[in-house]
Length: 83
Image 1 (tube, rainbow, N blue to C red):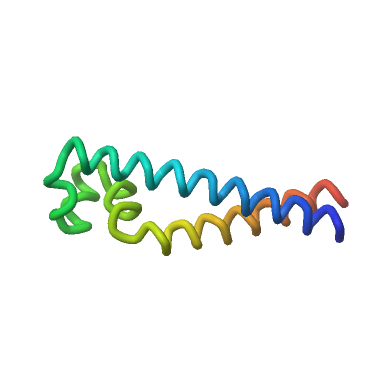
Image 2: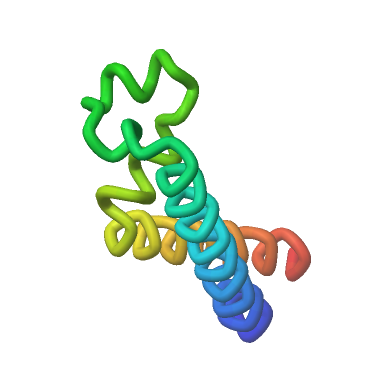
């Protein structure tokens, strides 16, 4: 049980770090290509910049999602190591 909690916390921290890096990358890409800030999600998807679009427009929500996914992945890894 202890390993699941520890690995879950570590996974959440890794998820937060990845989300922060993705947000920085998205803002840098929008700074280089300002038209990315005004396109729809459909156009961003076909242009290959969907993650940039997501992290530029919904950075807080994406950070929360990545922290939760990281926590779950870490807890599953801890469960796997435990058994």
